[in-house]
Length: 218
Length: 253
Image 1 (tube, each protein chain N blue to C red):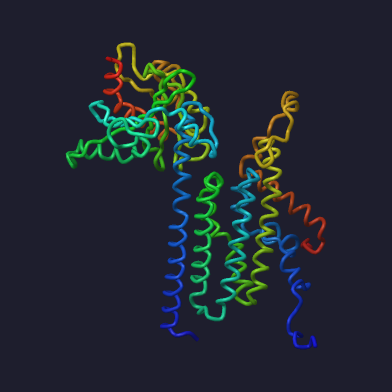
Image 2 (tube, each protein chain N blue to C red):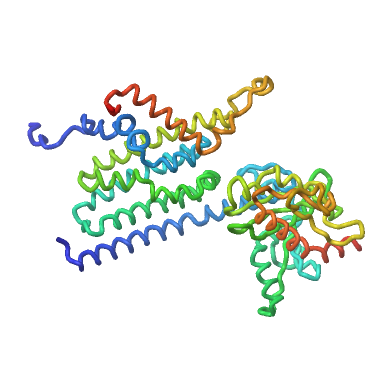
């Protein structure tokens, strides 16, 4: 009889799907909640650091959500922010050490920004808003979803900035030499941080024009 | 409500646990991290001699091109020579000598605080039938340490290549010292004048042209990066001067 399992929901229920995929679009941390903008500006000049940063953030949000959710009933409310910070800081240092050991060049490019994942508002935001009140598995999926949503925007921004700013993608030349000989030049603005704001702005514009529920009525 | 005792216990256990995990990770990953730092140092040395390398082939190229590692003292005597994987003399590898530590010893010795003698590393590089001498340099910029490698031709006077690195100079200003645009200015500059006196290569604010520094002994400073440029200037002078007695000795032979 399946009634014994009545209390359990199937693994890929509509709810889990929403947790995982919602942040990719309508609940995107960067374009809708405008969180984590600072690192989105700093490390999106090239695709490779953006990809590594995204994976790092996914790992940290997912793991910290999981850990905090497992501890949520034991954490004294008065020191919950400190507990959250200790968990995040521990995970971030771990990620930083692993990058230094196995991806040294990328770790040099990301430099302080790996350390600054600690202050990435997305992570603290998810811990406070979700992990403190939900079950571990849901929290873990929520963490992955939000990390993905952050990473998606990062990678889109980095794609355009690297293509237009350096004429390469993931370090490989994609714009043919011939075009440069005809007088095409890379756009220097794309290498500078303000270009990321422009690209993020365009993404927000496209997203809102496609999603009427995101538009505020004035 | 949680009691204060619970909160204290909770916090202490939590922190100790996290600290233990992090220490374990740091210990486990240390060998891989040290290897990366070593390869970076090798690549910097090779780059100053214009030998392109990747992380994969850096060690092999280093063995092929760097034919001798020499450690000298302030009087210009060879303390140890390391070549082809074995010591011909002494027992210090130039590669393991930290320029920063030696400069500290030099300073303390001048102040009379220590009787230890500073030693200086020198790399001899064989490239296209020419012998290059590579000098690691170390100094202070605006926000933190700056360093580099300077490769001299076999005449021990003309610079064939230079590379610089920094810990955290201002991006777009002082940090420009790490670009090849800045470093390549040093190519073909000379460190001795026509009378054989050591004059170093000056980094001139406002540009060498129109200053009283001879064009063969100066390069242009970085606009907006004056303190870093002065740092590079001092770094080169104070690092290379330690090798002058040695160079004079080999030239005399």
